[in-house]
Length: 185
Image (tube, rainbow, N blue to C red; front, side):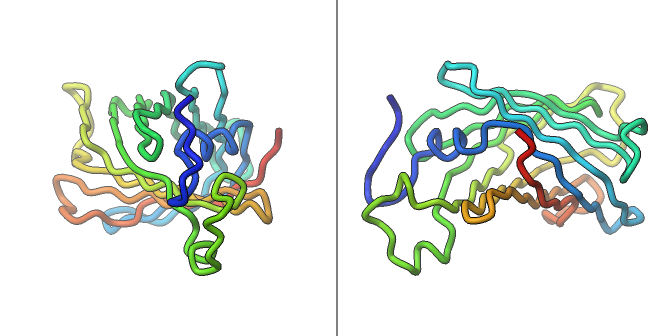
């Protein structure tokens, strides 16, 4: 019962429950130290009827599901009405604990739809890593911070993300991955 219907907007748990299901997307990757690339991705968010959701993501070479690239899985927790935690393990040997908040999409803020925040629709979830660990023999350069921004558009029932990271070589948070998804279940 952590759901909030206050005038400041949608609770983190309500927002993520709108994302439960499978999402398929077309994505791109870039970074100052690598060649740009394209890939396909499936994200699945499962409501296990507890106080957290299960999250998984699998990627593969664009157009060829038989050539996997990256995967990560973990949990989405709701420590307060506005706060969300994401706890992930990546196939690269990195673990990530991120914390953030849910906020209404700017267009909705400007439209002044504060009377019914739970049903208002579009929102953004911004997460910043608080802790990153890696296996001892992890590949260099090492990731030092990750920022994830997920945006849900209720009008189109679509999800997008932008993931930025910093490394021991690239000190500033820099855009790395972005994608656009449609719900498939």
